[in-house]
Image (cartoon, rainbow, N blue to C red; front, side):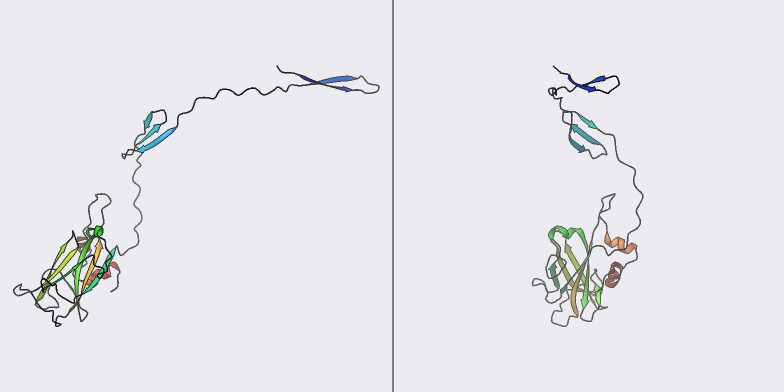
Amino acid sequence: MKFLKLKPVILIALGYLAISFTFISCSGEDGTNGVNGNDGVGIESTVDNGDGTFTINYSDGSSFTTGDLTGNPGNDGAPGDDGNANVLRGTLPLEDPDPINDNRFSFNLLDDALGLGLSQEEIDNYAYFFYLKDKFGNINSSDSRIAINGSDRYTRITYTPDNGNVRCFFYTLEDDTPYFDWDGNNALDIFIVVAIEITLNGKSGERSNPVNELKNVGVDVNDYYALLAYFGLKE
């Protein structure tokens, strides 16, 4: 039950008519709380369907899949600055022949002494270029049947991608007989390895071919110094 509070106010003036006013205050007590409403429906999860659409799963078990939200391709960005790619270089001294075959020099791309710093998992991610440096500072490509310093010798390289083993065989140009010269008279001094990372085409996913790419831009891969110059590297 609500009660009305009456507050009389009397105004008295001499010589004038007295008027009385009564102000009424309607101030009731607070009512009881009402019943809580039902819980609303929320989002439990959103799933990317991989085709430009998304599925929204609601807390009541229902779901909604949007249309394809894929936008139009953006404009090509401005060309970036020329870089030197991911190029690694390692060297090994040509000191002793292979103990099994003395016209062969063997090593592994993972050898710490070579200095490439590759892991087993990374071996197949690079293309390799091999060079031989003599004691006079000349650098020769170890490409098959490339004469060494105009001499009658050449090399053959075998490389096993699965384990990183590299073998360099020395032969004579005249009759392909093995070349034996490890008694100090051999002028060859350093074996050089240049590793260039193989990239993936963003659209096709195909692996790049550094050899073809270098040849297409006029770089002679048999010329060690031309390779360094192209990538902005110093000896």
